[in-house]
Image 1 (tube, rainbow, N blue to C red):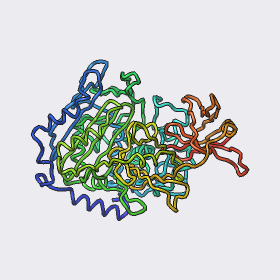
Image 2: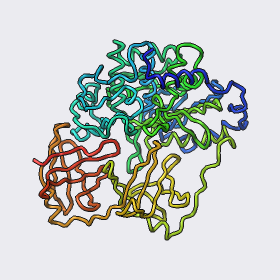
Image 3: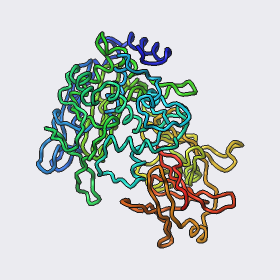
Image 4: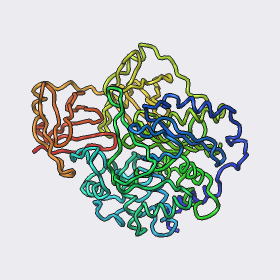
Length: 555
């Protein structure tokens, strides 16, 4: 078996031998309230109307379906209701099937997870350091985000994007976000490349391979990877985005790429997958499923929290294995509590629906006091809250985070969800994100420090921006034309109505808001102008969460 290096192989073997407590174990989901289905229905009450999209939900206990139901409309034009048989685009839930295909090929001896990706995808540049297949799976490759690259190249979200398009933009890249293996940063391009590798190694398309080796053996008759966005999918729920006037707009992606996304499925089929993932039958699936459930290890030696296309973590003290999905108007979440033998799947077709939160509420119904109490919110004084608003910058990534006081609460600028105080300068944003504000220290002479933990164990570190705002003359010095060869695009920096704008074909202007010195923000983007040794503006860089310091040279 060429599945991995020996240490990882040992963890796989160990995982295969320990599949969790047997059915009927005190830790299983055996004791639940008799009215649990009524309580679940109440959770989905906001999505039960005839003029709204909604969700299908599936819940299994000890591997058997306990409840499945649909809420809302699968198609608002024809008033078709969502049912447990409705088919949804699962978004990033697809990643676990791509990772599993690679694990099966490794078990077949056709590749090793330690192989250099250029062995199979020679189109990719040589970055001076090897990127392994395992690093693609675990989001440690350092590759730039494919969607953001295409955006900078002038592609719109409703353009048809193919596997070849993604591979072409990747092959042009001459830089990485970070050295492979040194950090963990969620990345879709890695899973597009995994799909390419699976196809070149197996000699079959990924949809064909997955049907033959995954979906058909597990009885997932309503699940498939989509290759052509124009294909007919009987029973498909349409995706929707909320419009500013309160109505809904169709939001179905015109995407012909797959690997990071592309799987259409039902709640019933995903429950079959969850059972196989957590409790595989004796046989050939045990070792690759154990690999899927095993978290990668960061350079520090601590678990990264990401296995084979799934997050491996905890929720309120209980182990979980799960993943969310976001693509156009579809929002999805599938999670298993392996020690309690409980699995929950929520597939939704409205972009404003939060399926992970809905699944967590269902977990509270089924697991009750086995869930640890949520962290207690501490009321912060007005003086404490007043200390933290400002602009913070990361020297590592060049990201900018702005924090403001609005409606009596601390929140990210423009954000709708306030930060909740946990005491001592620690705040939470949702279930997983933590924001820690610290006072000035010797190590941070420039001002206060902000550390943000998202889904990964390593925080993003920011310091308060102290640089003065640019003068009118300095703003005028940024006007000009700039080019990024790696995306084959030229950008015009203009001054209109006293504001700088970045303009390029087929995209709306980025209106730049100054935050100090040569640094600006526009939505999720940070734009930092650079200077030559003599102080002349010679370029700028684009930075977003998954793309760092993409340089444009001044023409």
